Structures are given as C-alpha cells and as structure tokens.
Length: 118
Picture 1 (cartoon, helix red, strand yellow):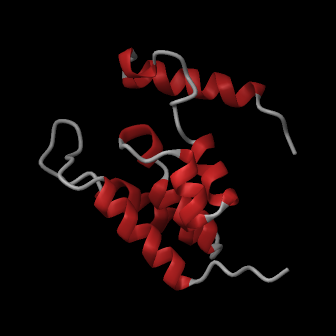
Picture 2: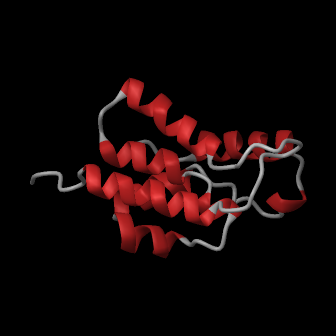
C-alpha cells in the first residue's frame, strides 16, 4: 500500500494547527503558541521524512489545548496521525487541567510505562 500522505496534506495539518492555536500565546510570553508545534515538526523532520509523523508533531497539542477532538484529527488526517496525536495528549489523564505542568508530564510518563508495545 502506497502512503498517500503527501506535502499538500502536511500543509493542511500546519494550517489546521495554526487555526486551532490562533490567538493563543506560550505561557508567560508574547510568543504565538503555534511556534512550539512548528518547532516540534522541524525536530521530527530531522529524524524522519515521514509526513504523517511530521503532521502528528505539528498537531500534537490540538486535542489537549483546543476544541479539536480525536475524531476531527482522524477524519482530516487519518487514523495513524490521530493515534499519534492522542498518544501525546494528557487528555486521557484524569484531572490533567488541574495539574501543574510537571505533574501532568509525570502522569503522561507513567501512562506510557503501562502502554502496550506493538
């Protein structure tokens, strides 16, 4: 099966992430939030040219920090991208919004320790 996730689809992921994070700033700064997901995508690109991985990187915070849902991501960008985005989200952690950043990251690490290995 040929991977049909091309540059156009990656560009759509960048546009979607930009739209979803519109008006949001990085905590304690005046830097637009989208800079962080774009940096994550750039880092992934240095490791792999897999456009689905790059899309997941740029979308990695949309489920956690915006109104976007897993189903939105799956419908627009496919199951693999949506699954990766969900795996990077703290939304599966009970009460994550009440946790500090350090607490939520530790809870995410603890979840990963229990995740099945394919």
